[in-house]
Length: 241
Image (cartoon, rainbow, N blue to C red):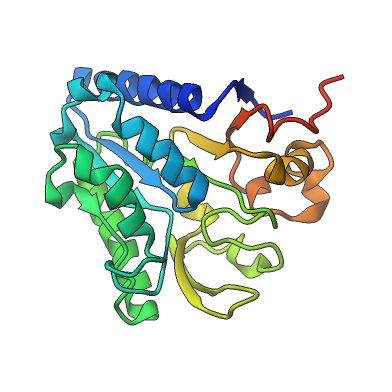
C-alpha cells in the first residue's frame, strides 16, 4: 500500500506541507540548486494554499530559488473565475514574495494545441537551471476528483497515460470543455508526488485508489505513484488490517 499520512484537520495538513516545503528548499540551498514545484487547482488545493500562505514558517523561504508550475489549466483567461492560475494567485501567490519570472503559468487564453507545445518547451528549458536534469520537478502537489481524475487526467482517457509528451490538450468528459494538462510522463519525473485529499465525499474514491487491486481500474494515479495526505474524513473508508 502507498504511504499514507492522516491529519486531524486541514490546518495540520497545511502545516506539514509548509514544513516539508521549507525543509526541501533548505536542502536545495545547500547545493545551490533551484526548487521546482507543481501546484494543482480545485477546492481542496485552494484551502490548502490559503492555510499555507498564512503560516509564519514560510517567511524564511528564499523565494528567488523557487519556481512554480501548474499541473493543469482550463482554457480560459487568467482573470476567469474558473482559472486555476487565478485561484492560486488569490489564495497563495499574492501573499508571497516570489519573482514574476519564477511563476510558470499555463496560458489558458491561448490556442490550446500551440500552448501545450509552448508549455512543454518551457518545462524543458527550465532544466537548464537544475542540477539534476533527470527530474523535471522537485515536488508535485495533486488533488483528486470524486471520479478519480488528477490534474486533468480523467479515467477512460488511456491514450494520455502512456504518451511521452509532457503536456496534452484534453476535453472534460462531461462538459467537453478543453484543458491543458501535464501528463504522467511529466508528473512522475519529480522527486516527490503528494496527493492531498479532504472530506467524506472523497472517501470512496480514496479507498479505491489506494487499494491493492486499483491497477485493474487504470486510474491515472496508477501511473503517477505518490504519497497520500488525507484528513480523517477522506480516510474514513480505508482498511488497514
